[in-house]
Length: 188
Length: 188
DNA sequence: CCAGGATTGTACCGATCGGTACAAATGCAA
DNA sequence: TTGCATTTGTACCGATCGGTACAATCCTGG
Image (cartoon, rainbow over all chains, first blue to last red):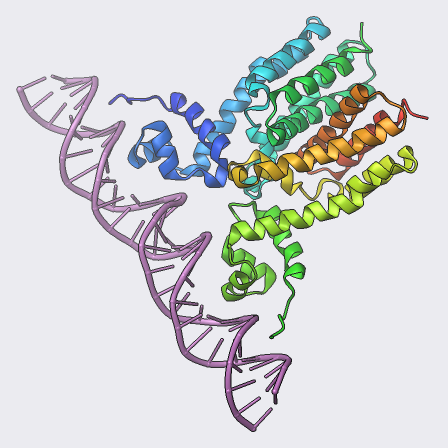
């Protein structure tokens, strides 16, 4: 069996960046080809399903990262305060203080949502659920915990929109600090 | 002079809906033509600058609506509590409880941002500024007022993202109620 | 070293993109 | 009614879209 010059898995992050920078519709195959250094032949060899399969692979990759780096630690909640602070630190790094957009969020806003609607919903449900579980571990009631978790996740998404629109990383960090305060103010 | 069958101004809201539903890149001229009932000839007669001028006209329309219905009443602030509650009611109606996206926000997230970056920034600066002024009228310090205003506007944008992704208008309304509480809790 | 399958670049496909040209249709002033 | 500028539908433009075909190339098992 022949060996691939580039593993499929090491192409996916490059794809993700193209989708982020040019949008799902705007990421043409020629752009993708240029960004990855792979010809159409290779791309369709790795992803026979074309652009949709590429995007699907990117979403898989994102899911995996959030699962291990964000959701799972939140549920472990050891201790809740540290888990939530770690989450916000990782989120700040991941979204480059607002310089990087949330691909899942923008796909959810767009018209190309339908094939991925279920997974997009699950991503946010998972995030809200994990954070809510962490808050419950910290002693909050299920109702209050859910509300706080929703508030925080929506706040992060809004911080991305606002900081991107204003071109200000400072806005993003300021919002994240606020969210941290709100999350921590009633626990421990 | 000949009269137009449709005034340019009455086409703009239809354009806005096409851009919202299909995205800026996805709104092809054929879709626009179908949605407005106007042929290419008429469209380029109304908007000689093509798609970019259409989008610019849509942004003008949005600006005008927010200026008169949201920003200006907030600055009037009579009284602050009512002004903010009115804003949230109008915002809920305008965004159809999350069923409608914020075109300015999504353009700001996308790659087609550049020609409109300045106006997008101004839109959010104006919103945050007006709300901040209202909060100051209510007695908050400039620093706190600005922080609260940013929090609320980001919260609204995040509520759109989250509710759209989850397909839940209830999430949007719940978030809006929370934002209302936060805005009002320390005044009067 | 060689056979044979995996991988690759490239040419090409029909469709559609945004935009232009222009002649027919239209509506108003005189 | 007639003259004329405006408005409109339609045909067409080159470019690019996502995707396919396929021959050349590469790599590895034997």
